[in-house]
Length: 261
Image: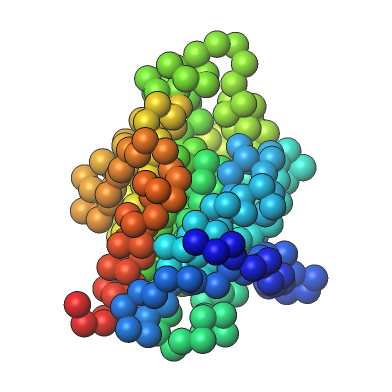
C-alpha cells in the first residue's frame, strides 16, 4: 500500500484542548457507514507517543477506520484517573460531532488501544456504559494491560519472570496507592460487572506477556453475556491483523447503525 500522508492535527475538548492526530480511512466499510475510532497508544502508562504509535494508526486506517490518535497525559506526573479522564473527554468531543471528521451521518464510534492504551479503552467502554453515553459500536483491545497483579502464566514466563518488569513499574506509576487497583476503571479485568458493554475484539501475539490477560478478559465478557472475540496471532502486524480488524469494524458498525447486511 502507498504510504499514508502525514496526519492532520486536531484539538479536542475545552481550550487549550487535547492534542490528537487524524488518519483518514483508506478502506470502505458497508455503504456510506464509517467507523470513527479513538486510538490510545501503548507505553505502560509512562511512555509512548503519537509518533511512536504511528504504524498502529496507519494499520487501523488501512482496516477502514477514521482514526483519532490521542496524546493523553502520562504517569507518574498524571496518575489514575488523569489519563482516563482526558480520554473520556476526547471521546465525548468526538461523539458530539462525529460527521465532522468522517463526512458521513452514518458514523459508528469505537475505542481502541494497546497495552496501557488498551486498559484505557476498556475503561472507556465501562464508563460509557455507566454514564449511558456516548454510544459505542465496539472496543478493540491489543494486548491490553488489565490486571495489576501480574500473576498470569504468560507474564511469569515472559516480561515479569525476574526482578525487573516494566509492566510492574508502569502499574506502580499509574496507580500509586494500592487502593486504586480495586477500582474497575483502573483494572477492568477485576471489575465485577462486565455486562452491557460494547462488542470487543481482543488481539494479542503468541508468547506476549499480556496474552493470558487478553484471553481472560474475553472469557469474562462472554460469561456475562457480552460479545467478545479473542485472537492470538503470530504477530499483531498488518499481514495478520488487518482483515480481522476490518471485519470487526464492518460488522460492529453495521449493527450499531442498523445497516442492512
